[in-house]
Image (cartoon, rainbow, N blue to C red; front, side, top):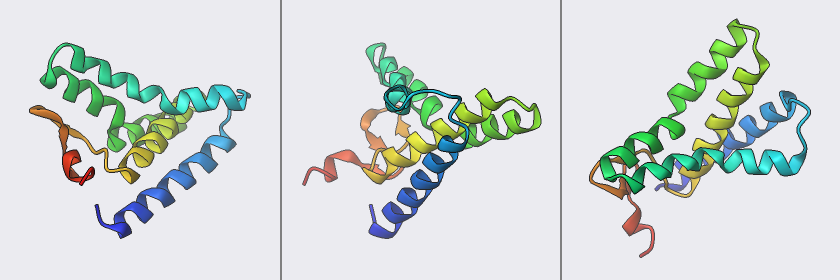
Length: 121
C-alpha cells in the first residue's frame, strides 16, 4: 500500500483514538486496549469457511457501518453507540495501516487493498 494511504489511515486512527478518549465511558486503559482489538473476533467466521469469514470480518471492519453506528448514537443521544462506532472506525483504520483491508470471499489474504501475500515479500 502506498505510504500516503498509510499516513491517511494513521491520521484517522489518531483522530478516532482522541474521540474515544472523549467518549471513554469511564473504562480503564487495559479494558480499552482489549476492546480496541475486539473487532478481530470477526475472524472466527473463517472457522466455517472463507465466505462466512469474509462476511463476518468485513462486518466488524467496515468503516461505513462504524460511521452509521456513531451517527445513530449521536442522534439517539446514546454515548455507548457513539463509542462503539468510533471504536470500530479506529480499529478498521489501524488495520488498514498494516494492509489488512476488507476481505474477498476466496481467501483471507485477498483484500480490497491488494494481496497480503505481497506484503511479506
